[in-house]
Image: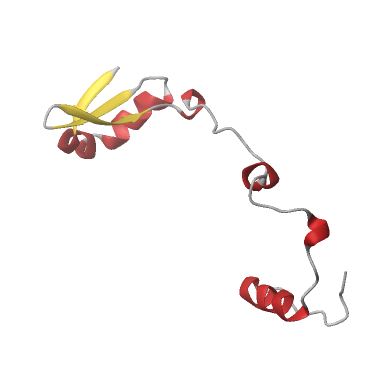
Length: 90
């Protein structure tokens, strides 16, 4: 693993990136303290994916309790740039 200060990292960035592409890891320090690490993409674990429903599971009530409100639906459509469909009712 390579360790460089911020100034050196800026000066040698292209060279350091070639090393990272070859599998090296670079720790960038400021005042002798590590502040960042540059690692090859393959070394970074992907963030776990969660469905929107999973994230909002405790926030959504039973759909049976909902009533269609055309004015509210149009306002939401306007907010997200969705064309109005006056005949689309559920």
